Image 1: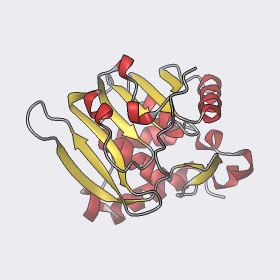
Image 2 (image 1 turned 90 degrees about the horizontal axis):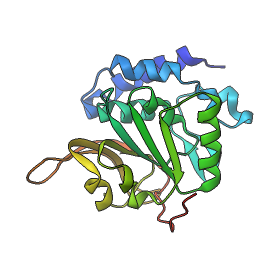
Image 3 (image 1 turned 45 degrees about the horizontal axis):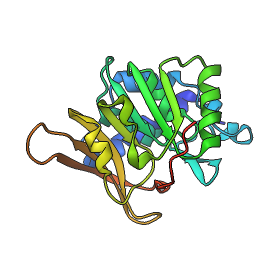
Image 4 (image 1 turned 180 degrees about the vertical axis):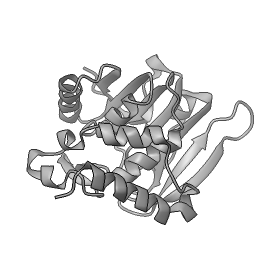
Length: 221
């Protein structure tokens, strides 16, 4: 059975293997420390704890997954988070990516359209004493306008387009990391940098496979 050290080494190896696509041969020390410090086994189904540190996605119920550690680390690194930043996450899921973000940013706001997943994640945050995370149920396409603007936005499900609401809620100079593409079809991870003037800068990083970002009616609690 793999442990956290195996997981971190797998991430380092995959970063090297994909460097010709991502332009990154290493990730920031801060991101790797966050990957080391968040107990991934606490965010997977109890029956899958033996697989918690494998470098692959795992099902978490409701047709959703906890993402591959390499992808979590890469997307986090692409955000270029500063310690004073406010980050919006679309797609709380199990809360694993959220917890990683919380170790790097001042505040993390996270939306999940599936109420049961949101409540389960909130319980984990409380149990593990993550105090700078704010979670609620909501439609990711609409973002969380009350807390905007954000220094960075991360979307953990594939959308067919970049939602205008998310661009509007991003600060000038901020980054939006999002997988774009058809459900279970071709998808690309992109980084959108919001510029104060002119068209936004869009960088394509690599091909990915994510569950679709669903557009449900709002269900606040």
